[in-house]
Image (cartoon, rainbow, N blue to C red; front, side, top):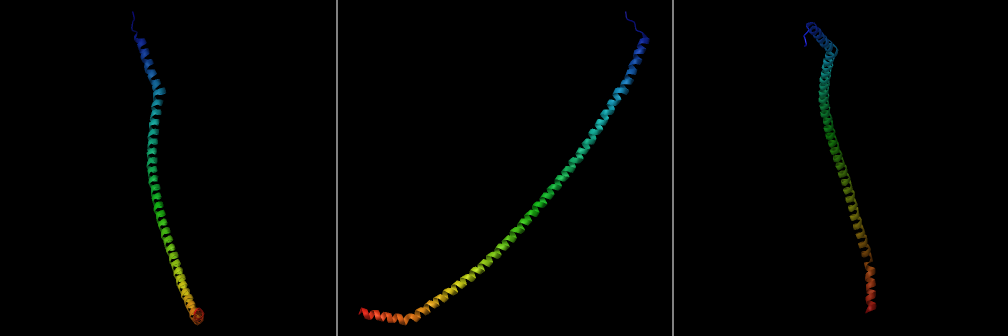
Length: 141
């Protein structure tokens, strides 16, 4: 049958402990160090990502503020331009109205002058017309 040999068991135990020490030094420690470094890298990347995210949010808010200011500036510039154009058009309308009023007054004055000239012309020709009418009536009778 099988017999247990204490010396063989002691050798196997020493080999097992030696194997554990070798594996710990050659495999487990480098693996644990690699995993720790990876965890630190992941934590650093997460922290950097969070900082970049907050920085991006700040930049987004700043960009939104700049856009809002630009919109306000554009609106005020547009309103100023509209007001300026209205003032200019009102000035031109006033000038045209004055010109038209002047032209109307001149037209009325010329019309009065022509009326007076025609009236004077007719008054000066009344004696001739009377003579002509007398002559026609006398021929007709």
